[in-house]
Length: 269
Image (cartoon, rainbow, N blue to C red; front, side, top):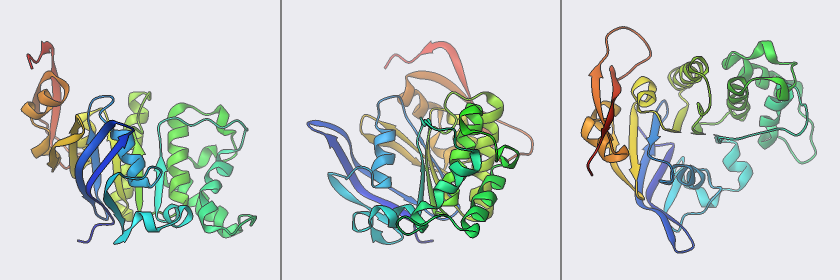
């Protein structure tokens, strides 16, 4: 299957500080690709490079076979949705108005959204289960609800690729599972290609079919989560001993395993 998004031998630096180098990955329709690594390893910077918000120092990003650098911002936005960690709105837009903003890449300068655009936004809102909040001010909903609304806004762009930077950060367990289930369903039913940075190995085991472990500017492992998320690899990544145990039962998992930390057992490395 041809990759919708591909990174070839990518590298990026802030001045003299090299954030990462020699990274390659491929994202196809229906993929959920989880990117794991400790704080400061460059996950967010990598996502910004994949989105075109930052320009690589070396290597190249390809979007549907075209160099990302050859596409302008609007062309990228029509094919790629992005949700980063923090967002606040200074104005009390309604939830539906926030999602309609996702139609901007498809509108000409100074054009107003049509009924079709509003309909697409309403479908995106329904797709994440937030229709009941459509008329509520965005500033008055919970953090988990905001994350789902922002995902809906990205979906209203009608993208082929969705980039998510820690979408479950600071959320309670229930909202974490709701967002993960939504991501898995969108990839499975709509063929959306998703790359998601997370701190939780179990998230990759729950919904991903690809994973990469990032440390000190490189990938220490890339591939199917049940092959990548081994006890040795996770100890190398986080410096904490863990057990990876089998899990029984039905659910949305591709890999039926769970990661259990051994409390008080830090690596000697």
